[in-house]
Image 1: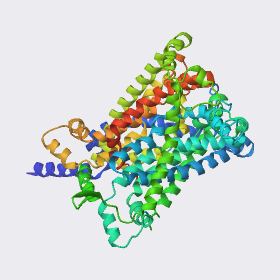
Image 2: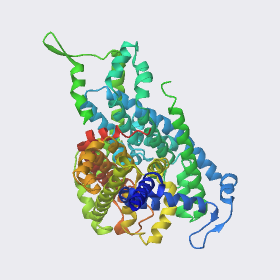
Image 3: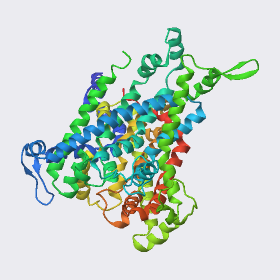
Image 4: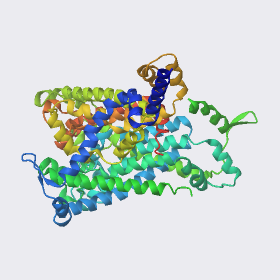
Length: 315
Length: 303
């Protein structure tokens, strides 16, 4: 009799542990963790650990050959006080990101919105046309042929033929035009995943909401956009914003492909270019890590800011 | 599936039968002027988007004398396939055979995509369909990782890969791709929409968790894994190998494109031929899976 009671108590205790203590719940969900294990081992190894290592190295002098030496905030101080090229890189990155980020985001949304009004067959073709630059990746290299500075460049050829200019414009080496060229190419290639997300978000909106809107007196497409469409697709707007911030602050390959590396007078030198300069060329890993950490902080900060802004849409 | 059911309803609304004829009923709140402006704008921007593709294709079939013509022509006059055959003939003598670049890119893309598909969908399944401590934390970590460019971590990654002895091997490009964040994110969001009852009934029938994942969940999230394949394919197909791989025999197709175009105007024909080759594969893949990708992206939102 008493053993039965003890047994019962034990079972209850076990159930209690299983349900309410952390360790019990972890043990109970072994299968789930097994599913997660392979992915998260690699995720930790190639994303989490690298971020932590970067933060650590950013406080050291490290040239790969010798062990890292702790030097406190020196890398950061040097970046802001003694590195004119870095200040230039910040300026370039912000100019580039402020134009391509919001403009690219807006363009992605506006075109998705327009395309959404088309009949399904044409819509599918238009989505393909607008998304092709993103999916074909390195093909932006073709722009470097089109913008070629000699008279073989097609754009120069057209401009000279029309008499707009009579000398070939050095698109990719004249500091006046370099940023413009990079922005054009970036806008062309960066509608991206955000665009698809917008397209999908628009198609997923409940059509009855619009019917209800007409009844409630919404009278043009702009009101419809602000009061129905945008609030209904907030999650997609946010996803697209995240994609857009990440790609515009991570830009560097386009600059290298269009204007060479380093570019003339550092006219399109971005933060990531600077990071590559110190990481790949000069092997000052500590300094490069400080740049990486700053970029990381800026991106996360901006993402938080945008998330808060987007919460206000449609109110 | 619920989404698909809505499709015919929308069509009915748009086309109305008036006097025996099918008439396209205009949506309320739409002015004709606005519609015309939108169509004109879409055409202009569409041409801008297509321009480099058409230019690349046209350049790739131009004979040498037309590449040097002034003023440069947009379209080729006497199209030829010499540039494509040159790639294989000339480049097989001078550098690593061109076919090696193709093999490298194809191999890296295939392995990386398959591994990513398997690992990410397994993790996504647990995150979407199981309840366990730390679930939100683990998923939030992935969302945060979407928020900064991958370049941020490339120096420590280099050191880690060098510590593993993977530098200058295929592994350096393939294994890190397994854990790319976008695929996991999309997969998890999409699997959330999978009815829990479906998994539950399989469990009652005695299926173990792996069977539930493999035979119940995966076949029902086809759009999500097609999308994951597209995104993973796109990023791996375009990888230049960067600083992780330095032997010429292991370099990829986009790297070859960079090298060829660096050769100046004389190489434009060959360069464009490579560009055409590089772009055609992912574009065709996207064309075939477009509706699935759009369906997946509908659940892509961050709440």
